[in-house]
Length: 162
Image 1 (cartoon, rainbow, N blue to C red):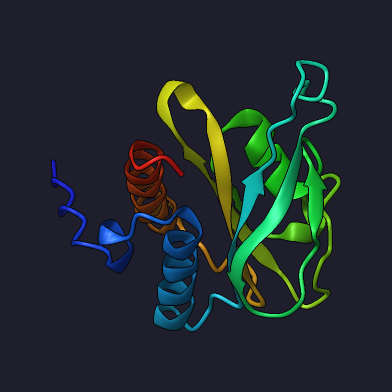
Image 2 (cartoon, rainbow, N blue to C red; image 1 turned 90 degrees about the vertical axis):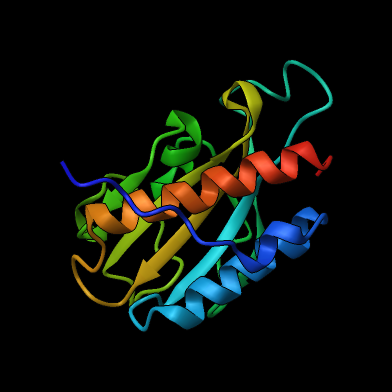
């Protein structure tokens, strides 16, 4: 069995501001991988009442990103991002055209990976969305490393008070 390498320090590790940390992660990832055509975060909105926090009313809102204009709000359960938010599971989609209910923010997108950013108790803080103009651009290796980055981001920035 091969053991995974530890994740090297991230530029966002020492940043206490949640938005600045997400912006740094999005920028660094987007610059590092030529097949990442859109890289960014959607933040989970928390409602003021229990009714506003029901799964049917929960919403993702655009956060820091790199790339062209994107959808501003995505309901939980809709498209790849909304599915990742609702299930709190990584969505690795080799062909977005085959994903039921895919939201086409950019017509050039062929494949997508969306990773939830979770705080304590599996509370959804955000999702990291990466789109590619290449079909089947993302692998399980991408999923594993992006999950490590998001896990660290969620733990670090929940602890500092978002």
